[in-house]
Structures are given as structure tokens and as C-alpha cells.
Image (cartoon, rainbow, N blue to C red; front, side, top):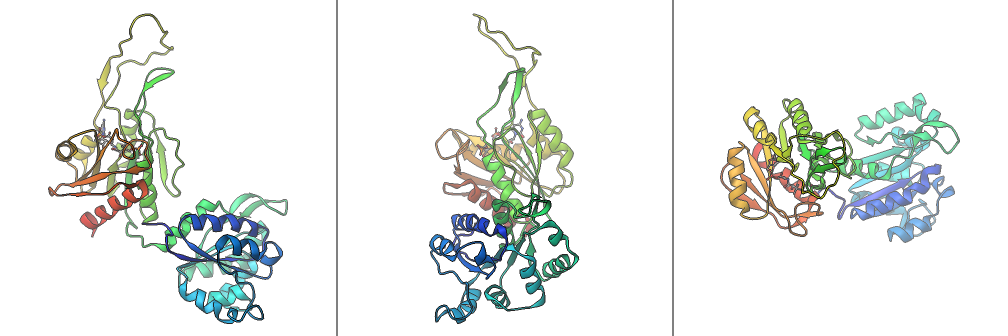
Length: 399
Ligand code: PMT
């Protein structure tokens, strides 16, 4: 699973005003399951106190090379050997300069010479300093050496000016750190994913839809992006944030979804149709709100195009994965859809029960393959289900 569970992360903090933001960053890393150890430079100590990080991390904080405790003289080696990843946030121009030039004159820079794991740097400083030629040259050098550099964001800076130099969003930093730490088995692959419901209006204020929240499709998009794929997400209306790095194409109706899918499918290696597309839509859409009366109201529906079936007819050498939302006889119905729609794989899920299918954070799925076999998964969080589906796609069709 791509999270930080059981990982040893060392968080280096150098002396900038954004140092206080690292407290929240540390909390987020811990929430992902990481054990976080903190190193503070002398300048960072001017902005934040070691006690805060010591209490919240539950670990000693490393601030001095000598003269603190007996063990500190070897701590940089001990922590370096155990670290799965190091993140320096904020990284000041001074610290960046030391790293690029092999200078080891404080705890953080000395520790950095002893590590052998991925490094993520989050430069944060005044925009003029950030754009300075020497700072940029140092960053380029470090990037070429394999460091991941997360660009600062733009906006109002502590010095009162505006520009690029702000500490990026915490979520964005964690996303990139996870991305840096895991192998990118889907690198070079282009994936089209559909998610969410469609809405079929019959007057300006009313529509027919379903209970899809988009969570399953968004989890697949997020995990595929983390695994290095270029992801296009065609999504019906949801309340979810677009996963970082994913190209979102928002749609409302089944027809709009079909248009977007057909115009973006040709260059894709993998197409995964998670969306709960309306099978029917009203024949007419009134241009004024239908007034309530004492009579019953009949709305005539027309059959929508089955987008997945159409892709099945058009596809060339692409891997096509469908979903089947069933309330009963899942194996029979899912297997039938697999054949009828010319799919390589279909993911069946039972809907209409708690903790699975529509709206839930978890899902219980069975994957059915063209070859006739199937794999049943236990109920899991949708992120984990997404990873298992991608694992299977990778192992069965890409290796
Ligand atoms: O969004 P969540 O709240 O996380 O819920 C996830 C989910 C339950 C919506 C998802 O896991 C799921 O099962 N998606 C498929 C829903 C569905 O429409 O199932 P279906 O059995 O009716 O359709 C079979 C397949 O045909 C699906 O891949 C669907 O995208 C596709 N289809 C259906 C009708 C249509 N007109 N065009 C299509 O492409």
C-alpha cells in the first residue's frame, strides 16, 4: 500500500519563518503511519522550539553535534542508517547551498552526508532569494543528483512582498514524498478513468441520477498517478478534490461523458470505467420548471448509449476494465458484462449494503478476468482496493 505506514522519516528543518508550518507537516506524516524524527538547525531554533517536536513526535530532537548528550555524537549515523526518506522543509538558501557543496558544519548538513535514501527538499524563502542564480544552480545540481525538489508556491510572503517562495500545501508535500518513495511501475502509461454519477435533467431544477460519490474512481486515479501513470479523469459531479497531478475533465450527463471518453481514448494504454452512468435519460428537458399539480407526472426516458460497450468495439491494443454494480448474482451478471462488452477484466461489487459500493469509504470487490478465473478481495478502504486492482492490471497485462 502506498502510504507511510512503518516508514522512518527524518524531517530536517532549517531557519526560515515557515519553520512553524513543519509542525503540521510532521503531524500529517504521522497520520500516514510514519515514525518521524526531527533535526533542527541552529537558525531553525530561532523560530521553533525542540520541545514542540519532541512531545509531538515522541522522539528525541537532534539539535547539536556535540555537548548535548553522550549519544548525540553518533546519532547522525544511527538515524541516517534507519531513514527511509529525508524531507527538509523549509529548506533555506543556506542549507541548499551546503547540500550542493558537501559542507558539513551543523547537525543537518552533517547528517545529510551520511544518508543513502530518497531526499525531498521544500525550498521556502523570499522570491528574490529563490530566483537567485546561485540558488537555482544549486537546486538544479541537487535535482540531477536525485533529490526531489518541490517548488514553493506563489503568493504573499512573510516579508510583505508577493512572489514564489511560500511553503507549499502540506497535503501536496506528503503526496510528493510518497510518490518519491515507491517504485513507479506505471511510468509511461496513459490511463483514462471515469468516475462519479451522471445527471440527466428533465427541467432546469430536477434531474435523475444515482448514489455514486466518485470515491472509487478518484482512488484509482490517485493511486495510478502515484504509481507514475499519466491520468485523465472524466468525472461526473462529486464533492471530491481532484487528486494531485491528475487531468480532470468534468462532465454532467452521460452524453457529455461519452463525448469526452471517445475524444480522449485513442492514445490511452488502459481505460477503467468506474462511473455509474445513467442507463436512461428523459426524452425532453423542459426549459421552465415543471409546475406541481394534483396529477401524477410521467417522464418518458430514452436509452443512453452504453459507453463501455462502444469502447469495447472501438478499442485497439488497449486494456479495458469495467465495473459491475450488482445487488445480487454478481458472478453471473459481471461475467456476462465482461463478455458482452469485450473487456479484459471487470470489477464486481455488491451495492446497496453498508461499507461497500456507493458512497462508502470501503468496498468489497471480486475481479473477473477474460481468462475465466476470478480473485475475490476482502472489504478494504477504496485506496487499497484501487491499489489491488492496479496490481492485478500490472501483473496480468503489463509485465
Ligand atoms: O462512486 P462510489 O460512491 O465510490 O461508488 C463506486 C461504484 C459503486 C459506483 C463503482 O464501484 C461501480 O460499481 N461502478 C459501476 C457502476 C455501474 O454503472 O455499473 P453497471 O453494472 O450499471 O455498468 C457496468 C459498466 O458499464 C460500468 O463500467 C459502467 O461505467 C458502464 N456503463 C454503464 C452504462 C452506460 N450507459 N455506459 C457505461 O459505460
